[in-house]
Image (cartoon, rainbow over all chains, first blue to last red; front, side, top):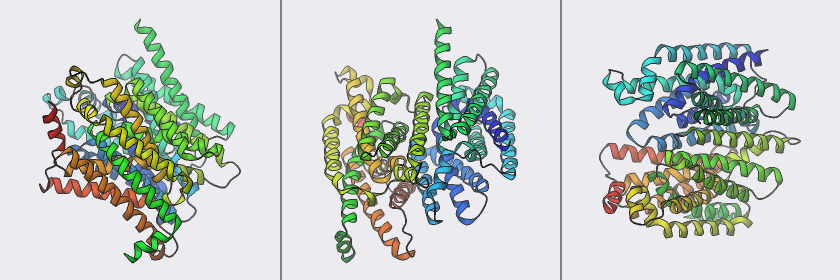
Length: 256
Length: 294
């Protein structure tokens, strides 16, 4: 039961936030923050805290670091270097705590069957916070994602919006990484929303469609993963890539 | 000096230092152009796609270098074909291809795990270790490094021109498409070399880190490449020695060599950023290149 509930929470929040990730062109950021949370979970496991706490703190810190370091210099270079350092640091912390290869594997590729009740509560709260935050600032967020210059003329603080949105990604990451794993949360954050953006005519449609797509992918993947005993991340990645491909083809047909 | 002599006696250390230094120099040269072209995300995607090849090779029991090489060169050419490189990672298609690749990596790793205990395959492919390199692959690694450096030298001038000003280069008769395709191949080789030494998902560090330090510090493009090479070389050597010596300090639990190298590279980059914001260095290699060509 916990698994189904948790995967629903992950799919819905990732589906909603993902639309903005795609609109803003923040794919690399969405790819990098989950890796930061990997390091946090590793530290937490080593010093005996709950992995979710460690993930939350680390995701937040790495999100802030990427935001502030990336402002002046070349953003992609900063993200790439931090990402790799966090991954290596996570693996290193786990290696200090002894038998580490299983832990690395679970955190990177997800372990959907091992969700406890308290994890579930933390996750749901984080997901709700993230979604509420996005819904509260939906107008400035949309404006600054699509037309940053015009938005700033109209009094939107683009910098603040970017910072808040980075924090939102950190919340969603913390909620999702225990389920789908650090490496594959990314596919849920990008592929279903991209498919929805290809099909929808306005942002509200896009958000609805993208949550539906994400939910379908997620439930299908959980079922397949339980049936076949293969990693859930594999099914999440392939099913969401298929959704994207189909959506692209449909959008192409509509155009002509 | 004594320390170095001791280290040289150990077979694994010799291999690690030899491979590490060759790879560091080759990737630094390739990295300078990668950073200039704003292709860090493309480079990083290539490393993730290379790990598909690496894990497949692990599953089939072939030498991992071949897996990395084939997968990353193919992926590089594929990206070139879709035209991803120009959009600088903003395109979601990059992300989706990348995520699908990671999905397959996890599948291959699971398949090769059955029967054995734990995810040691995941660790071997993704995080790698310089100490675990088979000495027989050293000639091949050196050959690949030389090939990529020579190829870089051959396409250097037109490639820099295309990077700085694509339209002007085209007007001057440079074949942009061809140059970009060749560069993606070289980047693929560089990624494969990095993957074999620090592990697939960490090789981005060797590619991007020293190169962006070089671009911050140096005043001219040639100096930037030399600085990048020297810094990459230094980070590998210090990393290897740290990792080897940590065995004595920590009582039997040595620090992973990949972690030491990656941490050193990040540290170097942060120091360079601090130096620049204090106004102590004025690296304007990028601007010089623009002025020279336009």
